[in-house]
Length: 187
Image (cartoon, rainbow, N blue to C red; front, side, top):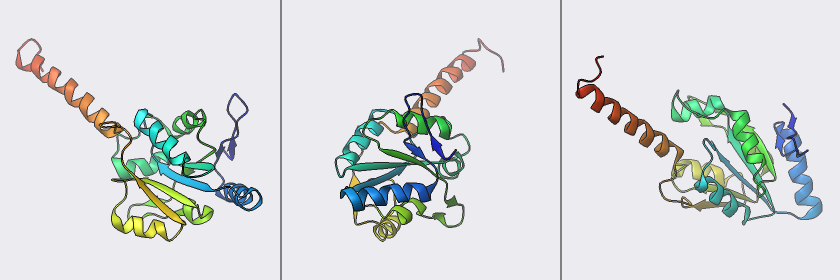
């Protein structure tokens, strides 16, 4: 998939990083637009994600959103994640009007971590991060490839996809254990 076109004719998803860089460079140089980049998993899109994306867009003119690949998410969050496949996570973001372009981020390995390919290529005017997403060493590295790093707080309390999943699973397991302990079900 080079450029994804949704049913409405939108061409927001650009997988080819060279093409995306040519587009953002042209928008910056010819139109003087400020390029903002943020990267995330965007699994089980929720209100915290959407508030964050709207806030990110407020820092510039063009918002480029990186979506962690399924492979990368498994390295970061474990074998049972993501819940929603990368193609669907990208398509859900297409419908968010604050987002101008979406790209897949698959430059993570077990030994050295994230390789910063998107921000190295685009050289954003602003990179937006959530306060607890990156350790200080990564923030220092990120600053090398962008003009400004903005670190935002979470935009809604208790709206982490990981927390949603853990709460649901713990709740279901607690109910199952009650039934087992009551003796109504034999294992």
